[in-house]
Structure formats: structure tokens, C-alpha cells
View (cartoon, rainbow, N blue to C red):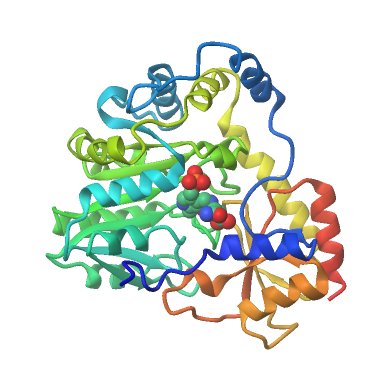
Length: 375
Ligand code: PMP
Ligand code: GLN
């Protein structure tokens, strides 16, 4: 019997594979296609000849951990103890999986908002716990009233993703006030805050869980260098949690991966001296604006995008097909790959919406837009 009977191949794999087969422009799976900063590739080239190839300490290369603590301090004025509250992970995915496995028990309930990124539910099921999906409002803001109604003595964790994949929505101060109100009634609930796009926000500034004192002793914050430094394939990120939770998370980590690949840790620890993650928002805002401008005369209707490098678009003016069929035909007939939004919903609700990734060079965006405008 399958332990994850509902799980099929991820839509990101399916669409990327199909894009390759049909030689389509791949705006589906989220990854940048422009060159990585030469300062980083130069560091790697030099380091590769140095003594950086053996296991790092289990929780991470100490210099990198100190640099992450400094980044957290400079970005959010939060002081963390790197040796007790920080873990370097093989991407945010491993931080999420490890944290859930370590902290959620059989029959616990975990609140997951709907739509959501795909990697939250499976670890919950593997713990024999229950995912409780709570729909976002139509404008993708959290419905705190419904979230509160979903909370009970069984609730162990609420997972938030801010900025939100796929909708690009970000949480505001009022959201955090509502969350605080709920948590004050449920002292046993912890929060998993997936902030992999923390540096990719536009008009509004990102509000991190790090800045909320009511969360500091009950929140696990997950981030990814893949997103922040355009290196998704390196699979490196980190998790920050209060000591009593991190102690448990490290127990799972040491048997899941023991430690994360060494050279990327050495390289990023040097790169953090020269790179300014806070410039990322402006960089992607220009890409978002350019992509939106290119699609202005298309039949797609673009939804607001406050953060992340994803643009949600309605094709209701173009076709009645369900969104999975539409995406497949978009590849086959028009040479552009996107992600159907229904795959982020527990009930696969079709709303004629698809997601484009605009983390691409201008030529790619222009070529894709030309095809999309011809539809
Ligand atoms: N969370 C979200 C919301 C994501 O979009 C992604 C990847 N795109 C991840 C987690 C996983 O990040 P990583 O590739 O660092 O594992
Ligand atoms: N997070 C990426 C996205 O949303 C995909 C990562 C993956 O392929 N697992 O497109």
C-alpha cells in the first residue's frame, strides 16, 4: 500500500518535461534562466581547488551560519544564536520536510492554506497527521475567521507562505494582528513561515515573521538561497527556529542528510560579503513590469503581483478548457509553458488561471510574450 496514494509527479516536473519535449519557452517551473552573478561563480572556481570538499559540521559551516545570523540582523533587526537556532538545509524543501517530520505527531492537525505550494501536505501525511486546508479569500488574502474556526486542541501547526506562491500575495500588518489573536488562544500551535521569496517584494515591503515578537518563540522560518541568489539548482537554504524546536529539527536533519553540500556553503559564506539581497526586489519588479507591459495587448488578464517571480493570468477570454488542458495545449500549439493554478488547490478547483514565471532574461520574456499576444 502506498504511503502517499494521492501523490503524483509534481506539476513542475510534468510541465518542464513537456516544455523540453516540444521545445517550448519554459515559463512554468520557477527558476531563473539568466547567468549567475560572476562574483559567485568566481568564488566557486577558486574554492573548488581549496580544502572545501569534506563534511561540514552537521548544522552548517560555522562561518556561513554567522553570516546568515548577520543577514537576519541587518534585514530584520533580529538577533539569533546561530549555534542553537539555525540550520543550513538542502533547499527550503528540506527545511520544511524536516521541521514537519520533527514536530508534528500522529493525529495532529496542520492548517495549510488553499491554494498552497505543493511540498507541505506530504510530510504531514507521512507523520500520520491531518492536513486541514483552509481556502484563501478570492483576492488571496487569508480568511482569518475561517482559519480560527479550523483551529482546535488538535491543531499543531499553521503553515504560512509569505510572499505567496503561486499568487504573489504578501501578508500585511493586519494579517499578523489576526494571527497573533488566534495564537493567543491556542498556545500549542506553532507556525511554519515559508519565506523563500522574502527579498522579492515590490511596492509593499515584506513583513517577515522575524519582526513579530509574538512569533519568535513559536515560529520556524524557512528560506532559500536558490531564490535569493538565482541558484535554484544548488538546493541550499536555511531554517531558523527557537532552540527548543531547533533541537528536535536537528535530530531529524542529522539522519536525513547529516549535513549540506560543503562547497556551496563555503561559497555563499563569501558571497554574502559582497551581495546585497535587498536589491532583489527592484531587480524583479523591473522584470514584472516589463512582462506585464509585453502582455498588455494580449487576451490574458493579469492579476496583481505583490511579490515572488510569478504572474497569475486568467485565460477566460481565450478558452473554456480546464487549466491543465489549456497549459498542455499552450505548449503544443503556442510554444509557451505555464503552470495551471488548479494544481495548488486541494480540490483542483479550475478557475481558468495559469502561472507564468518571469525570472527570465528579456529576450525570453519578449519571445514568450510575442507568442502569447498572438493567441
Ligand atoms: N517554498 C516555496 C513557496 C517555493 O516556491 C519553493 C521553490 N520554488 C520552495 C519552498 C522550495 O525551495 P528550494 O528550492 O530551496 O527547496
Ligand atoms: N518552487 C518552484 C515553483 O514553484 C518549483 C520547484 C520544484 O520544481 N519542485 O515553480
